[in-house]
Image (cartoon, rainbow over all chains, first blue to last red):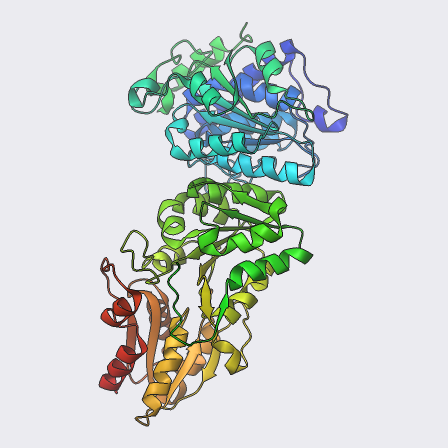
Amino acid sequence: MVVAPSAASAMPFVPLSVDQLREMARINRIDCTDMYMAAGNGHFGSSFSCAEILTALYFSVMRVDPDNPEWADRDRHIFSKGHAAPTVYSALIRRGFMPAQWMQEFETKVGVRLMTHPSRRYQPGLDLSTGALGHGLSVGVGMALAAKMDRKDYRVFVLMGDGEIHEGSVWEAGASAAKYKLDNLVAIIDRNGLCVDGRAEDVMPMEPLKQRWEAFGWETFEVDGHDIPTLLKHLDVPRSGGSGKPRMLIAKTIKGKGVSFMEDVRGWHADVITPEQYACVMEELKEPLP
Amino acid sequence: MIASLAAEGQRTKPAPFGHALATLAETRRDIVGMTADLGKYTDLHIFGKAHPERYYQMGMAEQLLIMAAAGMAKEGFTPFATTYAVFAARRAYDFFCLAVAEENLNVKVVCALPGLTTGYGPSHQATDDLAIFRAMPNLTIVDPCDALDIEQAVPAIAAHNGPVYMRLLRGNVPLVLDEYDYKFELGKAKLLRDGRDALIISSGFMTMRALETADLLRADNVQVGVLHAPTIKPLDEETILREAGKNGRMVIVAENHSVIGGLGEAVASLLMRAGVRPSSFHQIALPDAFLDAGALPTLHDRYGISSAVMATRIKSWL
């Protein structure tokens, strides 16, 4: 089923079922493809790899209010891997934060509201402008510290790419989040394994990643980043009486997931899509992923 | 032992920044202090002792320092983040620019060792911080002169809504401006004394040096005015143009910064744009070079920012 964009704000939001979330992830990939088609190119691979993660966050886990994007008690989400912006635009639009018509203008001319990297100046519902990598987790630490100081029960979710964790600032944040026992902070690494210049592990080896984060003092889980029930189970940390540890999900994903000719192909980090390829994508995305 | 800029016997106040921030935080619950393992050397430890529940030690991690401050500012706090100027300007620039300035967040970055205030050599001498930060949109830049200036600047920058970079004099800081009926106002330059022959426009501790220089030159019957411009950005264009345009006198800009990209070039371009022509224009600034290490008084003489050298140079230009 398709969830109408306006439905969310018209009545109290009910978290979507697992089947509905799978359908929302399908819509997310179609929205991304449409935006990239309008723009002439785009970051298909990293947009598709995190579709289920974003869908789980915005349509089940996070406490947000599209009518009040700056609601003080909302859960925060920092889309640190800002290059895949359309996937977060789709989530925000389908959740009711922004009008659907904005998608048609993505990157088509000067002055449009949606552009390659997310910006709070133009788009409601974001918690940080991103695009320069390695910023999100440190800002998330500050927001999670602020929640503790204010005795508020909101949670801070930070989604990073697995190339992004080459940045030293990510590890500075990792140490501090453990030091300050930020169990209201959940970081997700979209571990799709591909960077611009090649395999992430060739560009810069980061394994054993789980042990590294555990050694930093994080509660760390390796999960299938396309499996919605698993994501729901691990993303939804307690609002109070938590573990005393920040949580890290290393989400194993496939770059370009859902489109056979894009899956795990380096060239689809950012590429031009032809009308013939567009038709193929739409054919492959006719059904939700199992 | 922290090297002090104070001359022997000069009046000083200890840790004016730390005390001013601690006092301000008594009435402003949103004030937070954060540092990157330099609380002691940025006088923030005074605040930390007074308000331990609002003091955050982020370790030697300047990128995290600036961005965690951004996160706090997003949630309504007003963080004062301290480190050395070289680390904020050179190491954390991208994070400061995009996570703080682009979103116009209420983060105050207060940095010790601006310009040539340590003899440790180029790794710790921030001779380029103003050049780096002046190009950052939304950023307000403050370069106070003495303990009084710092005390008054702290509540003023806290009251300003947006990011601020402040150059900090730490430890036993000279007290000079209380003799001049002076009050810090953000964005305002203040004429401390007038003089028919030359006008020195200055910021930071170079205002103290400018006043000393004016005293030295008075003995030779040379009358030198001093215009203190502690807000580097936005510059008080109106006051600077008015004073620099008076009776075609010589204008000298004195700053504790490289000759490139600091107050001197800012004033020069302002005068050119406005068509204001002093009889001549000179810069007293640090050379475009990586400076030597050594004792500060020696270095200040070597690089021409001691009052004795300043007075000699100004006489040669008259």
